[in-house]
Length: 488
Image (cartoon, rainbow, N blue to C red; front, top):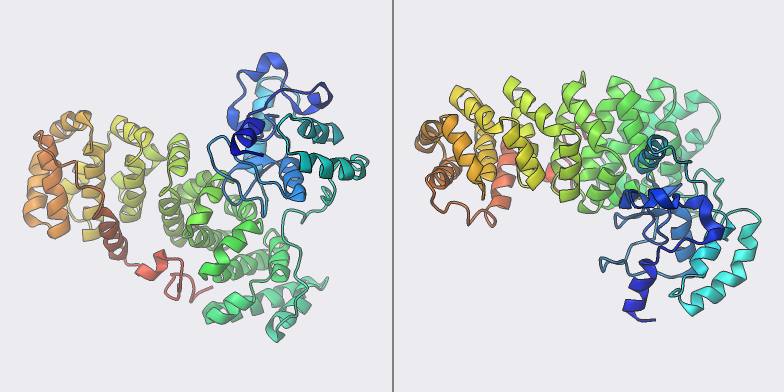
């Protein structure tokens, strides 16, 4: 079957009368947000899941394609990775809330009719139809596709491995598998201790068996159990090869729950875990899609723990390196909150890193200009007293705001930016001096807007290190210097 046919198949949104349980009433369909519809069938999703490549589908659609060994070409030309699924709880909640507002029944779980609708799609491969026909009869009685147990709480994740256990894993496993809460606590303390400083053990103990127990214990109602589970997960997440595995194992929704309602100490560890996991590029979109942005923003604004606030800021910085998460932050009202924090001097250097990412997208730049960002940033520079990293980051945000924006000139002039920037240009180090000069050049109508791309990555690395953190903390490899690795 040719690529064009595959694309046409996945653009097929015709509703089958037999599958109305999963569709939106016709008169409502035109106003249905497209992200609420499964890209495969066009049906409103009842059980959305996100796949490793970042897209969200109806769970059963993914399972059918996986069981048939068929990977579609989507309309945007990409091919999704169906190797694992993670419940998209944030999307499900949003869909159900939208249905309530529109007075539409919540979409019901797909049944056999849903599978028939996919089979009847005119561009579904002939080979897949044959396979589908032979197995669909076995699934219709249970309301699920063959090989998919919708009742299993761990059906989203890899099954615990049957490979032999190391002595260390066996010792921990025997404690965690018991029914006694004291054994759980002791097993987690042992896991936390073993993974605190040993890179080899962090790799060897990040098994499906251990992760399965951690998923359960992370949401324990016992504070010590929850705290030690969260700390152990942070330690495991320090190794690059564990980061994607942890996210694919379904931890992000659990981490979000703890960030919202866990103890202060557990929240510290969870913020550190999300920061660590967000370092991996493959995780950034999934973490954002699963709804971590707003809870991290709330933790940054109001957590009682300074460490939690710092790690939340760094997690948001790394998540906001991709456009979709910048948009989520802007829609969550991040700009106003972050500017208020800059004005009050809270964690200024890290917050400015996030603001610089937001200023690089049109929505973020507009919200910042509307939110008096230019006057606030110029005011911070005028006050002085900031550390060199915060001063440089402040100038970097102004430089990003001025790129290709005529409105910036008027706002900067009103704020008296020229005088302040001249002073910065005269007294700053080489990087700050250069940035201030480029802003002044742009304000005078000169170029100043070209060259902004190539050297910026190197400059950001220097600025990050100037916050007091080592470069290794911002890379996915050996994170021995990670702020929490020696304490968890």
